[in-house]
Image 1 (cartoon, rainbow, N blue to C red):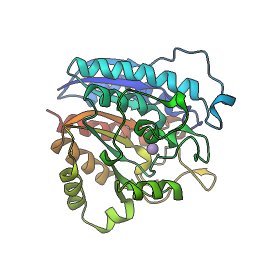
Image 2: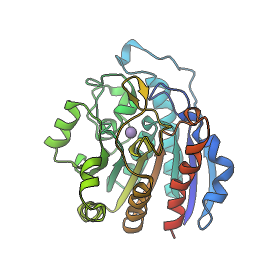
Image 3: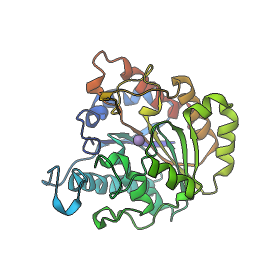
Image 4: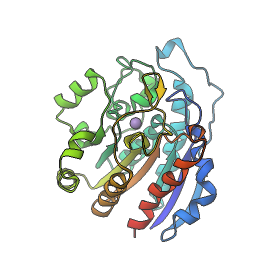
Length: 298
Ligand SMILES: [Mn+2]
């Protein structure tokens, strides 16, 4: 398989600097990570706007909306080009607001025939009107579905069907999000349900429910236990930490099983913050997780 690795230097969506640097920390090792598959292109998305202000009256409480939309539009173009060239785009974020461009590129290129598997501690399906923080990394799925009211967030031509969203690892959310997900009958498993049930059975169930030709995987490192991977942008009781979460070995198994059994359109790896990883303990794990893609893909 021919791979394009695309760095998405985004921190505006979580308003904590650091995750924008993750690509820089792995760039020189990409050829070591992708041994079996061929890297056709490596590129880091660039901002093409001077508008970087945090608040703008037009956008209500949402932070850095101009900067986030600009980076995502540039990512959209890059991912769409990569798909047109028959390559597999692997996006290294960045916070989770930086996957709007990749998902919308998949949707437009494959005419909406795309499911999204969201491996995350959070639903990330707040809207511009119910987001408690104004941080856009909490609303990307609502943007892709088209349920935000703000016109500036009208991204891509084809919207994601909410029934084509599949969640694994949820453990922290607001009431409005769970209500919406339940009302729409969206597939989700919380991390404790996954620990209590057999992971193979759950993955099998998920794979059998996929009805689309293509599948986008969005992997948020905050889905992994804080004991094993603390360097993520999660605020919990005032500290950047979280409770619960996947074991690293299960996270690898999830990725391996999904990639082996589904027809993947593109993959994002998000929310690793190297500035919180002062001893560089998580950097190796970050690379190990990405390496699963190379092990499984042919
Ligand atoms: Mn997320």
